[in-house]
Length: 340
Image 1 (cartoon, rainbow, N blue to C red):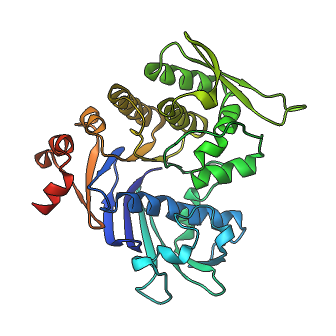
Image 2 (tube, one colour):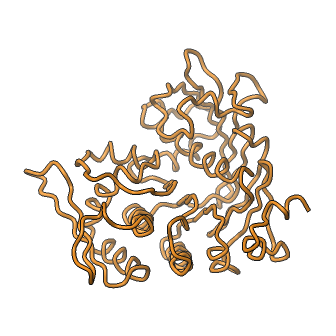
Image 3 (tube, rainbow, N blue to C red):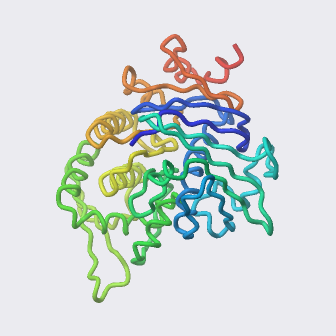
């Protein structure tokens, strides 16, 4: 199942943006243009569906109306969900609340309204819940959100599947990376494909996951290369970023993966390689990929394959070859194109 169109209204800086999605989608724009708001909205909308399901408030009523407390919302870009409304204020009333419209590739559609509720809660109003339910599973997440890694903790305690899945939905990759690898490791075919893909980026590297469930509290992961054997927390951020993305893809095989600047900390050559890997995996696993980036190397590598989306002042529009994205990125002049 894939998303054909996603429309956002009154979310953060976005008044009204409608985005067509294809297999590989690259969102570009200058700083503070609204790129992050768009991918946050996409994952937030799906997270609200998961939160309703997890809180056991899902019904087949038409429309489905559920009240969620801030602690019941699995993923929110802000601690206070009331700040997610347009202009930093979520309010009640028709034509004033956040509204998401999803259209799937088979033509079915559903709408999700998020409004201010009572006692600091939010109220979710879902039209066509029977269609939306396919995106609401937490055990088999429809979407994975990867906001980027700045490193991992020195140690990581084993957590239950429920804790892992909620952390995954929140985008807390740095907290659960070892737990993710531990869940992937018994899956022989998935682990093999993960290792093959990782070796294209980092040849001659092997990963070892150590955990005895009857006696161990902590999960240990070691990385072996020509230079020796080191714990994973001593590895470079670019390596950790690649491990995280590929682990997500091969463990869960989601319908959608949302990547916020996956080029961060990666050498330009590895940016091209991971772009080609994402294109290949998208075809093999039928996973839609949405990327925000400032990297001309990613744009270059996916030229002719990706669907480019310009974001400017919270509005989105398709980009074409005539926009010369690669040249503008080289010049650091995306904002100049907008002014022109």
